[in-house]
Image (cartoon, rainbow, N blue to C red):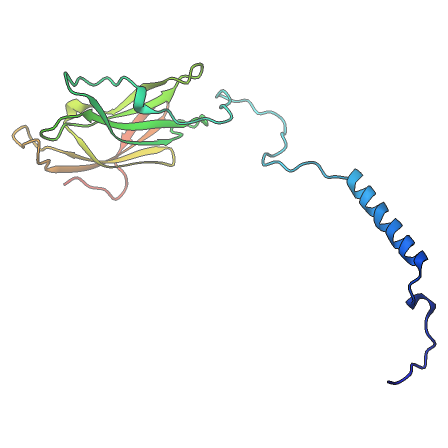
Length: 196
C-alpha cells in the first residue's frame, strides 16, 4: 500500500461531537418539515369567479335511475312488462345520468314490439319516472342494437314493410339516433346508416 503524501485530514476521523451535530441537524430538518406542510391535494380546480348556471348543481353521487320499480305506459293486459335492455348516460347535460330502457310485454309467442323510454330521477325523492318515449310500441318495431354514448341514444330498429309481414320475421332495418336539443329528443339517422 502506498502512503499518501498529504497528511491525514482532521475531519476524516469521526468523533462523538460529529454525531451529535449530525443528529441535531437532522432533528431540525424533520421538525421544520413537519411545520411546513403543503395544502392537501384535491381533484377539483380552485374556484374562480362564479359563472351563471342554467342548471341546478348535481348531487355528489348521482346514480342512474333503476327501471325495476317504474310503471311504464305500456298496455300488456295479463302479461308482465319486461325490461329487455337498459343503458345510462347524461343525455341533457345537467350532470345527472338518465336511463334509457327497452321494454316490451313478456309474451311467450311471437315477437312483441319494443318501446324505448327515457327515465330520470325526481330531484327531491330520487324516484325514477318516464320523461320521454323514443319508440312507441304501436310502431311495431324491435330494437336489435342499442347504445347510449356522448349524450345520444343510438339504436338499430327492425320493422315491417306492411301489415301482411308476420311478427316473427321483420323485413326492414333502420338506424336511429336521438339527442336532447331545445327541450326535446330529436331523432336523426346516424351518418353511414341505411334502410334495408
